Length: 217
Image 1: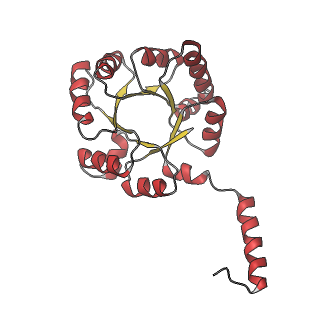
Image 2: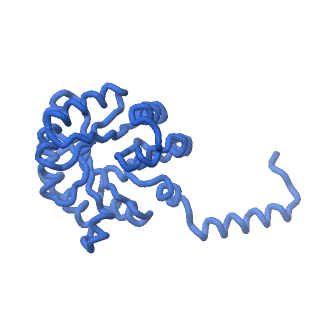
Image 3: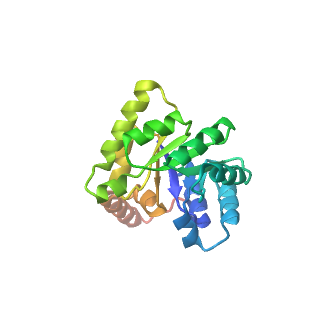
């Protein structure tokens, strides 16, 4: 499974990259607002900080305007993936951009039928929002399973990018089902390495080592 960092914080992206923990980055208008910097400058910096796909989202609502914005974003760097909403206009724009060789991440997916349409439109990634489904008492992880089955049935190459990840358990469950990618906030990605028994064992080892009075160097 690939991990994408869902953030526009370049320092966090570099830190995660140094640990070998991420394969790409996703952004959205809310994350750009939080960063408080020029949008195009942020995307360019992120693309420089990671060699993997970097999702940059359009803000237009009509297909032709989405295509224009998408082409402009794709010119920022070779690893930009244009992020489009799962609307009919978004699907039209996806088809056109995909035909131009531009990678597209179709976002705000909440049903298997929507995911099927995105794959037929040539999306490189589909982003089902599992946390937001959980918020309204619908099993978000079950949606990942449905999409996985449909894509496998017909050989679609669109990658399932599990989004709106809220916990380490979300990532584990998506990995068990076979999601291709999980995008999560840095805090959730860092939490994957944590376990109280690891901390307890390390503390015991260090105390025993100190009692020997020895030094490795």
